[in-house]
Image (cartoon, rainbow, N blue to C red; front, top):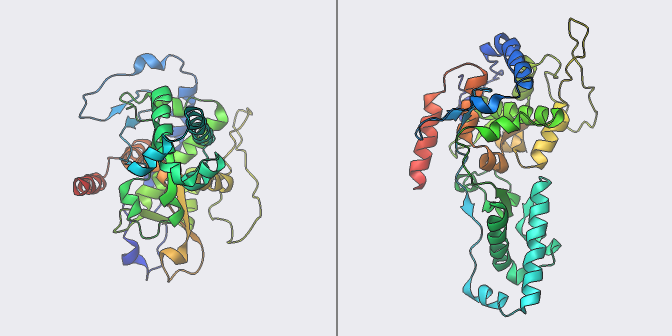
Length: 344
């Protein structure tokens, strides 16, 4: 896999996007694999177990199952706040906990961000009791649905360019392991539109992280010009350049034709998809000038906190290597392992 120079090393150069050599060669093979998978209804029997110390994969998609990022527990509750909670009448306490639990669950299912302060206020929770109520809500969400309420990964708090709004955000995550890749199989097996969006998300995350420029804080950022050029190399109908800054123009979504006269495949609306991914915290988007003062226009993208918690950088690395039919970059895995050792 091609690795980019750091932003610090390249900020004085006119760096052109690195187009993966295998991208165009493998496009037909990848499309054929996806078409074959749509017709395969018995692939559950193809799932094979792998040793616990090795990545597991679905034989249908060839996608390894890697653990996402380690997340942090929600804000700790002070003993005085805990005592104040149980000073409430049982009816009032139960109603407050139920209201916050329901609000958190509905927001999570709608992929909305869960701002700790705003969500509590929306549920009518007293601000002086919010941490204690969140703790009780988390217990119920875990007992009933198996979900856990978590903060962003610890390493992301060290990112110097991370917007302050993410410090107060919670995410509802599924802590169950996906040893045989079943979750990733379902990711690509749902109805057509959702499958396309999820597939595009994985490709975007792979290009951002594997082709982005690494920084000392563990993040990787890619210029929008490079991202669109790479996406265009995979699908000619995707624009090769991003919209001009400030433009509200909506670009036409192209439908490719098929030689046999059948129905073509509609290319995704990448502009709208990137906006959606940013809104749902799967990606971060910042002005390029905030990343590098020498850049005066455009934007940079990085993996967002929700992508870190639900998918993880290691999963993205393996996904990218598998769809490109290339070996995993051992240096990238070594960087993640070293980062994990440093946090222990």
